[in-house]
Length: 488
Ligand code: NAD
Image (cartoon, rainbow, N blue to C red; front, side, top):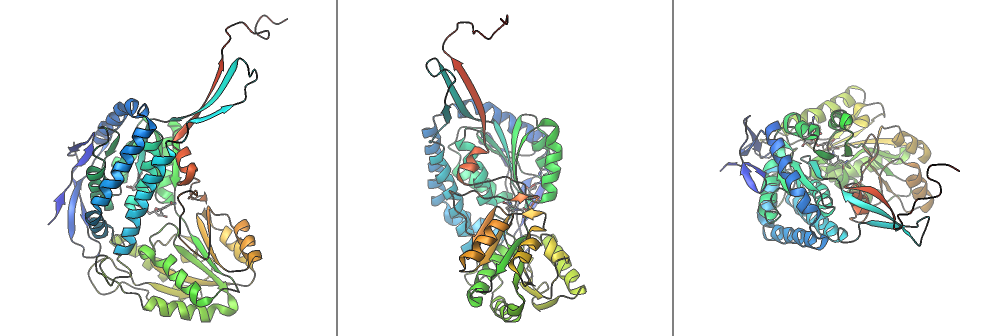
């Protein structure tokens, strides 16, 4: 049974002022699950007005009370977790264990920032006249934050923005992806409805209409967005005249390096996971593989065997390892990257096409004989591909990794300290994984260098981005100073 979900503004359901509705599908069956409003400027105006109205009250709500509200959202989410995970799986596609992990991580983010928000409001710095002056560095909320979220981890990547933004005292207008708006509305309405009206709002719609109206709104001082480089560039150009604070988490082209000392069997297990988790639709998916030339054939054979054993299916089926891609159009990009590689000499060892079944599935694909100038080694594929290239010297591999304009993450498999240190010092990326790819740590910053955008989520850095610094120089003495006019 399909459902229509209105938007959520000031704790009320809102149907769009204009525009129509957008279908949301189950990518494993192509069945329409429901519809959400195609919101536009008027809806954004309404949501931002509600958020601005709520800001003064929220800003002056005690940090301890804000933390308790966030913990209550966690408790409600745990109560609703079966329903949430089921809808998340139906709408987003990845296998249920991966969805459960996402839901759990999202709650950890709420818990972490609920506590971090109680911690401090800035610092006191030494004054020029310590007896009569006080110098404060205050950390203040910006006001209204626009949170623009992608579809690949709709709850997790929302929580990395929502939790710190709220803990810092901002109010939030969320623009979810068109592909995962049902689950976003379900989570917010069901688990955050005890927050004061206007503190959290959801406007659904396309990026071009609802998203851009949010970016262009003069009362939204921060745009926190995760998505593609192209969308980030567009947002930056719209926001630039208003000098907004931008927090951009953009695309990646992560490398996975097998060092000469690595255990090939275990490296193949790690690679299958880091390249094919969420059907390869992870910003930190391993998308370029570098293995020592002499070990390539043996490694490719083990990887291929493991990949052939993976079971495709609906994310809710207990025996599914890999679900579908999130939408049909994403399969075209994967097919184009493979086609370009094969036309220029690459060899497909397994996969390479859409299976003959309903749903937006794409076979997990292993390629060898790839070269760095092929599209599959240069542009983000965001699909289930494992292109295996070779290297002879580690420094050469590092230089080739750094040739990418993207700098999100990179993985090395090794036990040799000199190799590992050389790798993590040499590679320009925001996260380096040694042996254990894709694992985040809530206390450690996550984000990318170079064209990945430079934003950092998680850790104290993830809170800092939602706070602006204000220096208060306070002299208790009203007497004129010697150095004022007239000069001696
Ligand atoms: P996308 O850029 O198409 O969309 C992201 C969000 O931006 C969506 O909500 C979309 O509606 C909105 N949007 C689109 N155009 C807009 C505009 N002109 N103005 C305002 N908003 C607009 O990305 P996607 O396909 O949803 O997600 C995949 C991309 O996200 C990949 O490139 C991936 O690497 C990246 N990603 C990055 C990270 C990270 O942390 N660096 C994490 C996950 C995904």
